[in-house]
Image 1 (cartoon, rainbow, N blue to C red):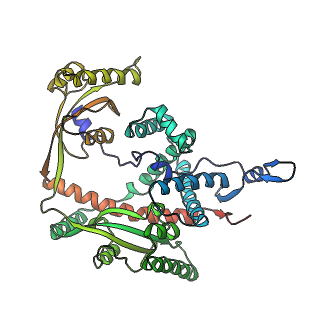
Image 2: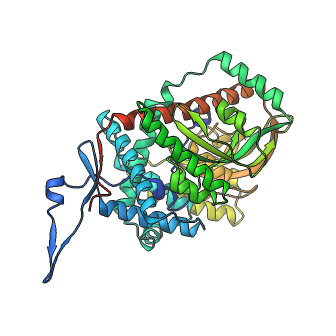
Image 3: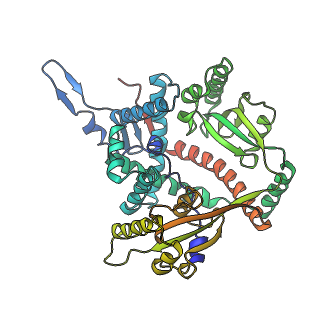
Length: 455
């Protein structure tokens, strides 16, 4: 059990985002009725005829309606106001959000065409995990969504589509990325040269996309748009406002923040530009196959001389739901065990008598665990604990767990781990670049009719 438990592949997921953050970027709801029916749906009043809804975009054989777009605008406005972000003009925000909804809809359609499905059980687990991460019961979580104007059924479908988007990216892009041994050695050599120097950067980013088979006139129009964005930045306009107004990047409405990026994860084009910048400065426009980019360097820092990893010594109690026993019953059982431990009972003794895996005889001791050696659900719970703290019952593919962290340490990476980390860095960089190109090609192949400006 231990080897299977510790070595299961880590699957990166955006589903553990804070409350409502994922809903902000999630895809739109299922398609509205066909255009012919939708546009004739009217409500009559004594003095006038008021349209109930209208189509703002056609994406292949589906539509996006004004009501759908309006819901998304309201949600994003709340999120930006809550985060202190400066809102762009309402018409600019509508155009930006509609373009993102179109891109999401194209990807969801492609996933469904390729037979990618997400069952209800997977959605329920994802929703439960977000509730757990916010320390809310499911009823309290639903109430919190409703207070923010988000229907629970809509949130569940957005979650389903978010999982679909992750799976289609894995299938169409990430699984096709190949990293050679030569690339790993090159990355290791680069890291050795930069060790102790500046090799991590916190960035903001504006991307003005250029269609794959753009005409010279289209390219020039997009270049002018990028130059206009650069002019606004150099006049002192806040970066989040410029990003929300001009950028086509997925993070445009979150201020264009890329966060901290290791130099190994940055394209050479970006790295050459930002190495010339001081903190707070903005690059010139940069041309790549995807379009025009502008970067702002917020901070830069160096790596420690000896790469290390935080290892955690942990123990757990594992209980599986058996036939005739529900998850709720198992969870209640573990909650009672936790109460006994908090009240002074010995964790190891309870693990020996209750845990259902090979570590039971050792009091549930997992030994020293490095990042990526446990399944994501377990690792998230473990990382959130302080030394000596015991988690609430958490669920993983193996069952239900109580987790206790005993101690942590920094351990220098072995040569094998250095190679693995270098391979992951190269893979992440190549996957980022491949995804942007794949998304642009997929969008260009789709039939999209934008009716937002029609009245």
